[in-house]
Image (cartoon, rainbow, N blue to C red):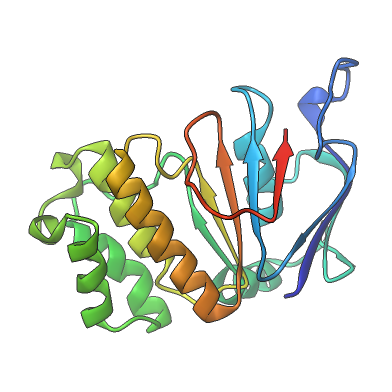
Length: 214
């Protein structure tokens, strides 16, 4: 996939509002593969909704979302499955981890489906992110910041043309934020993929091609 387009897209819940001033809602917007984007937003402006709309997780919006010029609203379950398996990776704001499983088991749930990353690479990321000692720890006993780092590793265990990271460093210090950004951009560059990051304040310091105000 080379391009994502939003044309006059707006969450249904915002339809009666007349005070919306946004670079994305009710605009024509393009996200191109191999470029870096930051979506800055205030709480309640639809940041997580944007990710869910593009990912096909929700469809409660008006307007259009197109992938390489093709309208996505009527995609079948099989089409969305293929897109999420091969074209889109997503680090959810709420992470969506399994607390009763270990960090490695959470990562391997995805990696066993895709067979994409070698265990050596996964363990190297754990080491780089300072959580090598948490590989066999239950997720429910880890801090939210530690879980965010595990969630990034899991998100990278698949091929993708675009990766969405929704407030990925909200609970990280500057050092781990920088390391996460380096890992993320290295893998995206290797795959020739685009990055779409969101933030309501603190964000990964990357060399963004464009910053949108939601």
